Image (cartoon, rainbow, N blue to C red; front, top):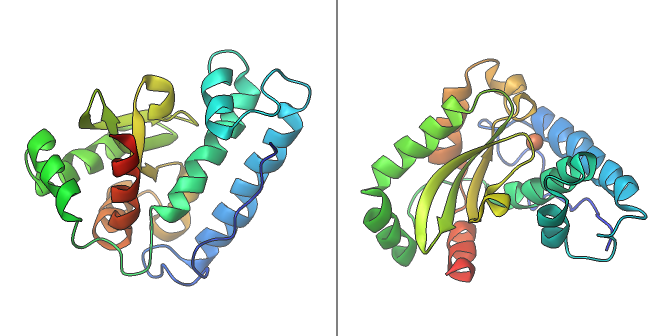
Length: 198
Ligand SMILES: [Fe+2]
């Protein structure tokens, strides 16, 4: 397979004021496109040509840094656009909420720990909710890595590369993370990934 840039599932204006049109024009139209184009070039002639995106990400990790970085970021961003929606945040579907409370203590604690993981990710990376050994866990990873290459299945991720928030929040990463959790998360998509992961 080759990588293709998906359309955003909403207009570039739809997430304002929490994520601006300008941010999405750079982040989706330029940064994600670069991962797609670089990934396609680096995939050519490798042993992973013809495999699924998840197989390429897992297979190239630790073996082909250039391909991994771009394929990993393509995978992360494909989900990232769907992890947000206009008027997001709000209620978490019942079954997922129960599991979050059981594994992480409470919804409030989950949000706190998720935000804290993003705040403390040194440099570029992502913070996550993932399913590992049947439990929901909070994780953080550097650069283009994801729970996928650490034995877990991601169900929610927030991009804490500066390109995701610097236009709208400058250096205030905690404010960006709080807005992501309270106003942007598409919990229905998180629940869909959770149901496939267990
Ligand atoms: Fe990004």
